[in-house]
Length: 121
Length: 113
Image 1 (cartoon, rainbow over the protein chains, first blue to last red):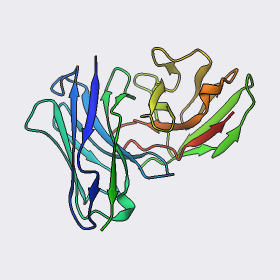
Image 2: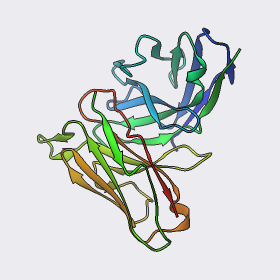
Image 3: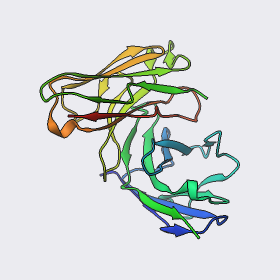
Image 4: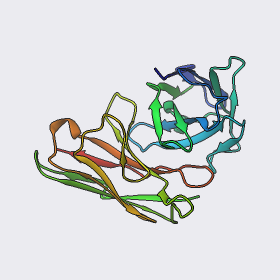
């Protein structure tokens, strides 16, 4: 069974750096075609694609946020970490991680439950 | 970046009726080498993570009811929900995954029953 779970602080102050961890099981990010994506949804707004890391360590970012985002594989083989610098109240959102198997379905077929992050002083 | 535009932004449909949601991409998401459209549809209910409904524009994900269907090619796509059920009330998103990321989402369509 494939599962993903997001973890991180519920509250960060403006200008701080946010670090979120996606812990997954049931698949290996070393397998060809596997990737993990971060997506967020601000309150009352649409889903926003943030970043992706794949089995080959390729990293891709939202064009509008790429200067603030870093995605990486964690020290544990079953983790992906997203950092976002210079947090702003507009970054208040529910942050999700999800799996994509490229070449098979290519959609985001399994999602974590999401973690809510509030940016406030 | 490929821009995904959905229409309408919201719609209200009666139980048992048909709902149609459109999605247009700013450039083609069709790969002629494998004859596939790199487009997915998701259902998002409040308090839950989004759920993959359709991939490759028209392939239903396992476990998704047959009343959900996807169609279209190139830049124009449609999600059709036939015979609406109460549990279909949600926000629906299209997303492309053509070529290299970013794999952008549409702005969402809120479906009320």
